[in-house]
Amino acid sequence: MQRICLFPGTFDPVTLGHVDIIDRALPLFDKIIVGIGLNAAKEPMFSAEQRKKWIGEIYKHESKVEGAIYEGLTVDFCKKINAKFILRGIRYVSDFEYEKTIADANRTLDRSIETIFLTGEPKYTSVASTIVRDIIRNGGDAKHFLPDVVFKSLKK
Image 1 (cartoon, rainbow, N blue to C red):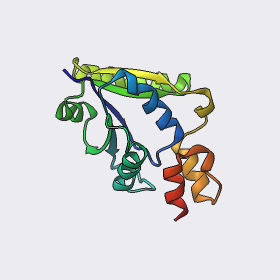
Image 2 (spheres, rainbow, N blue to C red):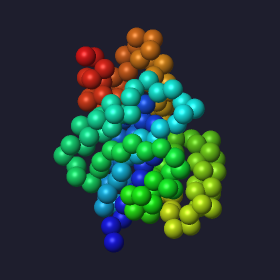
Image 3 (tube, rainbow, N blue to C red):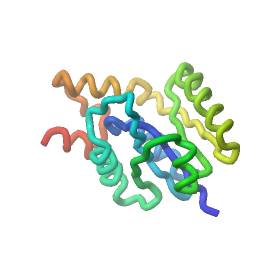
């Protein structure tokens, strides 16, 4: 049985922090689906299709990673793609408290799906999509926070 993992998030935009978590999770799983969740309560800066395209370009030489767009409950999408693991990145203790609440709810909904937490590399601790979007909106240089593929596409 394949160890399929879902890494859910908005990825608006994909940052070096996201890439760090995915790269370090590669040895743990046979397949990592980067799930771009659609959330009616959030107004993204970039289209879901653009975010999925970035994942495809960043991991074009890594067959274990693919992007997908989904709506609804994360555990329902896990069932659809046969994922038994949810991957989440943790930067701070406050992230853990929030993520644990979600993991507990997901476990209540489906006990067969386990949440795995990876802590981010210290150099990426300050990298958050919200901050990166503010830098981009205000004409700042977001190069230090973004994979080359994402940064170059923004320059166009």
